[in-house]
Amino acid sequence: MPEKDAETYHLNPFDLTKVWPHKDYPLIEVGELELNRKSGKLFCGSGSRRAFEPRNVVPGMGFSPDKMLQGRLISYPDAHRYRLGVNLRFPAVNKRSARITPTTRNGAMRLRWKRRAKVNYEPNSFGGPTQDRSYVERPHAVSGTVARHDHRSDSDYYTQPGNLFR
Image 1: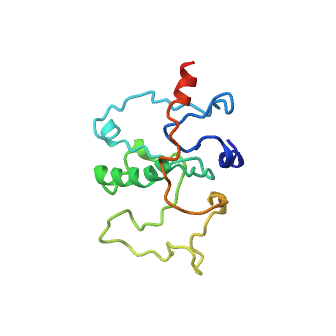
Image 2: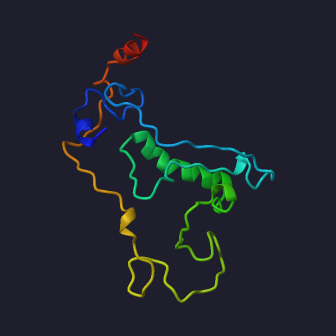
Image 3: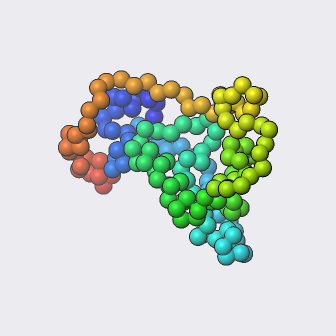
């Protein structure tokens, strides 16, 4: 759905209790996730070590203003850190397929480390890492007034299930 249509659509496109009518916006298949093997080692790749997060997206793709998604972007990584510990990225099942350059020195929660000559922060004037502008999320236009949303204003709970039934 284009952003212009979302502003004037007859239902809130980010309401989790509503489904966009397929005659207006047909489903677009984007891919398939296939879990095709089971790890032989119990704790190296088993289900107890998996950490799926909605923030792991294709570079350059932004996130929708859906309130549930926004909450999950914060809470899922926090829950994984609590459940798996600070080294949750080390099991093979959780590693990214693309190479990344983390800005932490010698891993998370280290008490002793070898000092490096390179700086690990940005912006800097020492030739250290710089921001890759291709990953910056595009700006969102915001209009209107900001206020508490009255959830009672949309009290049409029967039209959409009725259309689905018919």
